[in-house]
Length: 361
Image 1: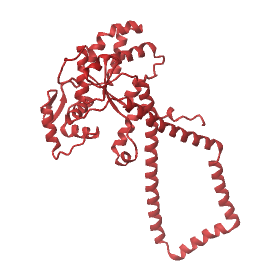
Image 2: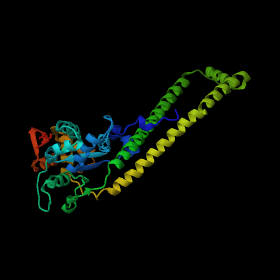
Image 3: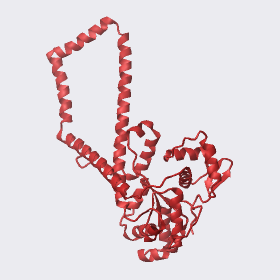
Image 4: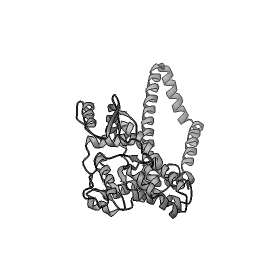
């Protein structure tokens, strides 16, 4: 039991569901911190590097790369233009040769990874200032979604006026996701335990109080006398002391104490790792750009990939952090979507992005 490890049972990919559950409870939102979550536009070089690693260097089929974990955990919300699909297809044969696999095997692995990415086709294209025109869609996705940065190894982006992350954040983000999943699980569990315990004690006290009120006074006196006699009588007192000693001995068992100490140490360690890595990640990110309603609307529709009503879009936007003081936000949102060339009203009151599903080459 001393070898019990929380990270063996609480996986990083549980973090997304835990955070969604946290958001739905006003109490949990108040008492638990929100895990770090960053919006990144994934450049083609990052995806090609990931495919090369998976196909050539990954030893166990069930093992997950750092990028897989941070996508599964929701720590990174990944976006890309449809151009990414074309670029990967162009290099599929080259990747196959490097990894010593078939082109079909490359396409299969890419199909799995592609499902994790939210594709968004930019409204505008402005190749001015681009050394490589292929980089322009990534820049525009970053601007139009309001992403934190483009995740890339391509130095061309530095001259394009777009925020980028050039350092390898995969492992730091994975470390954060693993620690945050443990921290959030413990926080949610502790909060619910306290809430249930308080509610149960309150209910039991209410029932006991009502029950005591109904007991005739002579019987109350008899119960108090019997209780006092139990403590006064040597044999009864000895039984009570024996039961208390047995319970204390069990709790004081070195093995139980070792497990409890180990769990407390692991929980503290996870909280410290989550805090420290969050600080390092935030320090690595470029200064955030101001996000407007249209940024949130594009993000929501790119992620959902299905027709949404204005009410649904507004609800998702607020959940993503958008704050509005508009008295008629639905009307404002309708005007906003009508004025954007990449939104379509596919049925009365239902909206979707022009490209809601990526198309393979």
